[in-house]
Structure formats: structure tokens, C-alpha cells
Length: 155
Image (cartoon, rainbow, N blue to C red; front, side, top):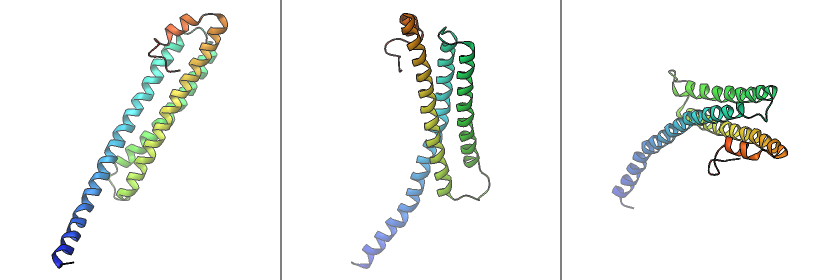
């Protein structure tokens, strides 16, 4: 190959390195944003569903306390992930490389996604218990109305 072709190829390769780095940082920023938004999703699922469960006479006071305890644990654990993410994003020391930061962001994103799915699963299981109890009492209409229209039902 002529000398100019080799130098152009090397130059393009050298220019592409910062672009890859920027691209990874942009992906990283999106994952940070998505992770923070998932905290809102988790909170919305909890608040909306638990308010409905409080109006549901299928649950005893003790059961509602246990359900609230379960939500509290899941919220605490998701908050721990958010704290870990905050510590990496707002870090002022140079003790971590960009790769290490990106790995932590990826891990936090995956954990938060798992917690969001766990909160949904936990909610669906609790609503399922209510549904089965209502079916046994022949009171399905009230329970079906409480937890949403046909389009809103996710359990």
C-alpha cells in the first residue's frame, strides 16, 4: 500500500478511538437516566398498588403489614443500588477508570431492573391472592373493579 493510504487508515483509526469513548459515555449516561427512572417506576407500582390493597377487604391488617414490610425491603435494596450509582457518578477522585465506572453503571442498571421486576412480581402475587379469595367468596366483580379495567389488569 502507498504510504499515504497507511497513514490515512491509521489516522482514521486514531480518530475513532475518542468517538468510541464518547459513544460509551453516552450509553452510560442513558443507563444512569434509565436507572433513576426505574426508581420512579418502583415507587409508582408500590404506591398505586398498596393504596388499592388497603381498600381490599381480602387482606387482614396483619397481612397488609407483611405486604408493606416486603415493599419496604425491596425499596431499601433499590435505594442501596441508587446510592452506589450516585457514588460512582458524582465521584470526585480519580480512583476509578472509565471502564470501571461503566461496569458499575451497568451493574446498577441490571440490579435496578431486577428490583423493578421483583416489585411487579410481588404486587402481582399479592393481587393474585386477593383474586383467589374473592373468587372463593363469589366477589370477583368488586376485586376486578378495584384493580383496574380490563386494559389495566396486569396480573
